[in-house]
Amino acid sequence: MKMIAPVLTVLAAILLLWYAATVWMNSQWTYDQAARAGEEVTFSELVTDTLTQKRPVLPAPHQVAVGLWEGVAGQKVTSKRSLVFHGWITLSATLAGFALGTGLGILLAVGITHSRAMDLSVMPWAIASQTIPILAIAPMVIVVLASLGITGLLPKAIIAAYLSFFPVLVGMVKGLRAPDHMQLDLLKTYNASQGATFWKLRLPSSMPYLFASLKVGVAASLVGTIVAELPAGATRGLGARLLSGSYYGQTVQIWSALFAAAALAAILVVVVGIIEQITLKRMGMVQ
Amino acid sequence: MSWLIFAIVFWLAAWALNTWLARHHGSERWARFLIPALFGITLLLLWEGLVRGLNISPVILPAPSQIAASLMASTDVLREDFVQTILKGALSGYIIGCGAAVVVAILIDRSPFLQRGLLPIGNFVAALPIVGIAPILVMWFGFDWQSKAAVVVVMVFFPVLVNMVAGLAATNALQRDLMATYSASYWQGLFKMRLPAAMPFLFNGLKIATTLALIGAIVAEFFGSPTKGMGFRISTAVGQLDLPLVWSEITVAALAGSGFYGLVALIEKLVTFWHPSQRART
Image 1 (tube, rainbow over the protein chains, first blue to last red):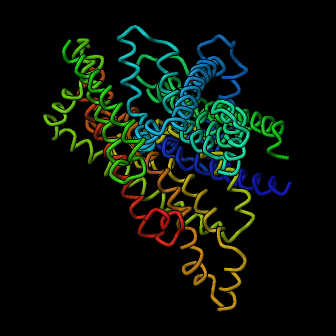
Image 2 (cartoon, chains in turn blue, cyan):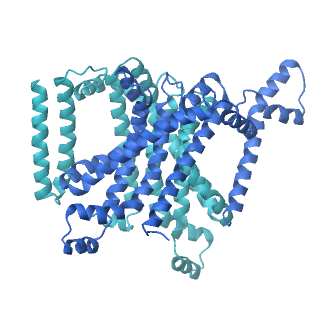
Image 3 (cartoon, rainbow over the protein chains, first blue to last red):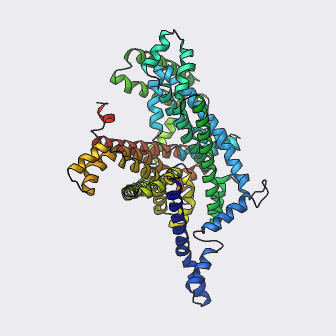
C-alpha cells in the first residue's frame, strides 16, 4: 500500500508531461496548416488539433491506447494488423531462444564447475564477451542463415539464445559454487559421489542465482528477438512492426508496438518471478 | 585437407596442454593469462582450419585471415565509422545519460516519496526493450549522430539511476550520526560521505551502461543514418555479402566495447581503491 500512492503520482506526472509534450511537439504542424489556410488558431483549437492528428510527431497517450486496443482486440487474431499475431511471432521466437540459451548456459556452467581447465579457458572469454555489443551481429546472422536456407523462427531464436546465454552462464557458475566448505566437507564425510554432490547440494543451492539470471536473460532474449526482426525482409513480429512504422511515418503504430513489447517483457519477467517464488518456497528457501 | 588435420591436431595438443597447465600451475599468475590466451588462439586456428579445409564460402563464414586482411585494407572506413558511432553517438550519449541519471538520483534522494514512486518504475523500465524507442528518436532528431546519442541517453539512464539511488542509501546510521556530531551540512555530508560511499554502486551501473551505449548507438543506425557509422556499414555490407568487412566492423566494435569497459573499470579502481572488492585482488 505504501508503494501505490507514490507510483501512481509519478505515473500521473509522466502522463501530464506527455500530454504537454504532445501539444508542444505537434503544434508546428498545426501552425503550418493554419498559416497555409490563412487562419489564426486559438489555444483551445491548438490543443484539440494536436491531440487528434493522424500522423503526429508524438502521439497522445489516448491515441496510443486506442492503437493498442485496436491492435489487440479490434482485429482478428490471424490478421496482419493484429498485435496479438505479431506479439505471438515474437514471443515464440523469444521463448525458443530463451530455452535454448538457458539450457546451453546451464550445461556449460556445469562443465565449468567440474573441470578446472574449462574454467580457466572459457570463463575469461565468457566475461569479456559481456562487454561486446553482440546485437550488432544480428543482421549478419539473419542474412547468412537465410542464404543457407534457414528462415523463420530459428535465426531469431539463435540471436535470442545468444543474448540469454551469458547471463545464465555467469549466474549459474556463481550459483553452483555457492555451497561453502562446511557443506562440501559434510558431503565428503558422507562419502558422497560427485554426482550426488551435484544433485543434492550444488544444484539446489544454485536456484536463487539461476532465477536472478533467468529474469535478466528473458528480458535480454526479447530484446534480441526484436532486433533480429529488424533486417529488411522480416514482415512479421513486433520488431518488423516498429520498422514498417518508421518507414511509413506511422507513429501511432510504432508506439503501440513499443508498448506491446514492453507489456510482453513485463509479463515474461513477472512469470519468471512467480515461478521463482513458487520454487523457492517449496524448497524452503524463502518464507 | 592438411589445414583441417593441422587445426584438429593443434586443438587436441592445446587442449592437453591446457588441462596439464590447469592441473599443475592453475593458481599461478602467468598460467591464468596463458590458458585463456591459448584457448582463444586455438579457437581462431580451428576456425581458420575448418573454413579452409571444408572450403566454406566467404559469403557464409570468412576465415580469420580474410577478416584481418579486410581490417587492414579498410582502416579509413573503419576509423570514420568508429568516430561516427562510438565517439559521437555512444560516448556523448553515455556522458549525458549517466550525468543526468546521477543528478536526478541526488535530487530524488531528498524526497522519500519520489524515491518510492520512481524506483519501481525505474526498475521496470530497465527491463524493457528500450532499443525499440530508436525509430521514434531517429524520426525526432534526424539521421545524424544526435539521434543515436538520444537513444543512448534513454538506454543508459535507468540502470545508472537505479544503481545511484541504491548507492546513496548505502551509508549506515552510525556513519550518518558521525557526520551529524560534526554538525556537517547536507552538502558536506553529501560530498564527504555519501557520494564516496555510493561510488561502488555507481560504477556497477556505469559498467552495465557501457555495453548498452554501444548497442544503442549501433542498433539505432539500423533505422536510418548518414552513409557512415558501424550499424550502417554492417547492414549495407551484409546486403552486399561483403562478410569480411562485416566481421572487421564487429572486431572493431568488440575491441571498442572491451576498451570502453576496461577504461571504466580502471577509473573504478582509482576511485574506489578503499573498497574491499578492489583491495582483495592485489
